Image 1 (cartoon, rainbow, N blue to C red):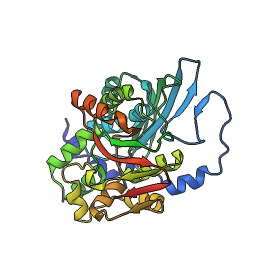
Image 2 (image 1 turned 180 degrees about the vertical axis):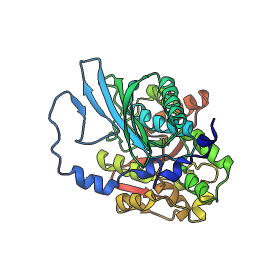
Image 3 (image 1 turned 120 degrees about the vertical axis):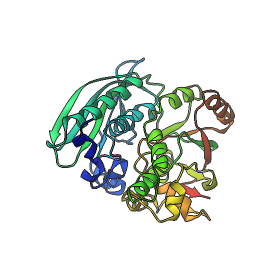
Image 4 (image 1 turned 90 degrees about the horizontal axis):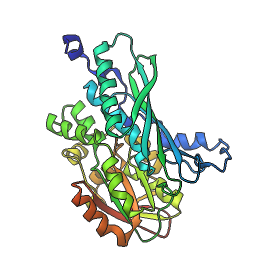
Length: 345
């Protein structure tokens, strides 16, 4: 690696990194409210209601999933950045119950950025796409002062095997497949409060595809699934609750946290996405005695986060056994009941 490549700090070129750079969910809702949903019997998932990806039915056995996701650098290492951005986009397909098939790069970079840096980003993304079982087949790159990278991804799913965001039912148990706190740890590291070991663990989780978790989940036939990303656990739980017409109860003491995340929350570390997530969801999130440290964890924007899963309570033990057998992380964090909103206990 050249000395020029070594001195490039990608995060210094961005005003905000990772999924914390997402457009405000509250403003996005307002913007999309004026759109007339596309009418087509084959458009199984579109904007009415919106989900993690669009789904279009080809025939009785096949439907295509289409999604895109990109963001500014969340880390300085080019390979980590490329892998994390690719993971975040690919995970939308897994959150819908499908498998990625094809991906295209979406890239914007300053012209003065060394070509070795771009090469490492693209190579890491390609490796991650292959690990997901898909192919990176091209893309589009423009000049921009702030780096941005991500993927447009096409996947496949059986029309009857889609995992919607709006299918949670009273009596369901809620599970999470990754710990929380990527935003807190990354912000803490940038401010010098989190250490390299904490950074490395957060990066490892952000580079982890949700493929294995989705594969282990299929036999359980979940009622609702979404991936926890920029809107935080509370924002995505609110979306699941409101679109399913149910209330979601979250047990804050069961929230899994990345190493160092709770310490950063206690030290008042927050990302720029935290106030946006509170603006979006706080009117629907009722905190009943949960400490602010865990509330901050719930509002923390996640990059390439885990799956939030709602499935009948009686299948919970079997699901936990399957994840344990596969050596995968799983934590029960709450349940679904009749009503509305999100209650944090």
